[in-house]
Image (cartoon, rainbow, N blue to C red):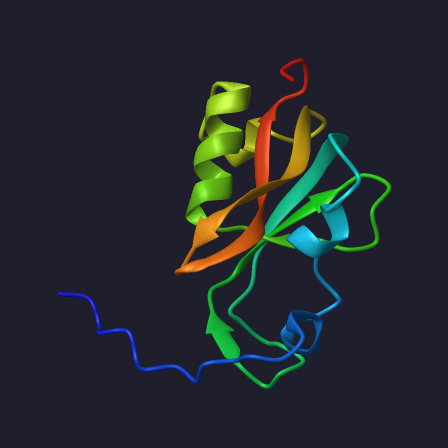
Length: 123
């Protein structure tokens, strides 16, 4: 059985105050349209402490060529990239292109944007 999700603290101020700017997030993509990126590598860390002092165990970071910032890879990203590239084997992602974009929607009860991926060719 999985550990229960602990109760968090609701935030109501500017979201950028709570984001770690070392990583790509949806705010970076809002208004940019489709961004074609080339996957450089995927790395798994033992843990990482974010700027807001939260710690995450075993995060997976997705790096792109020509980008100084990686993306903290989530299950939805892995699923979308695996589908777009036809393989869940991250060793076969290196050098491959995908389209990254910000998708507007309602998540966790709030209207916001999320980082999404699809094949390079799709629009």
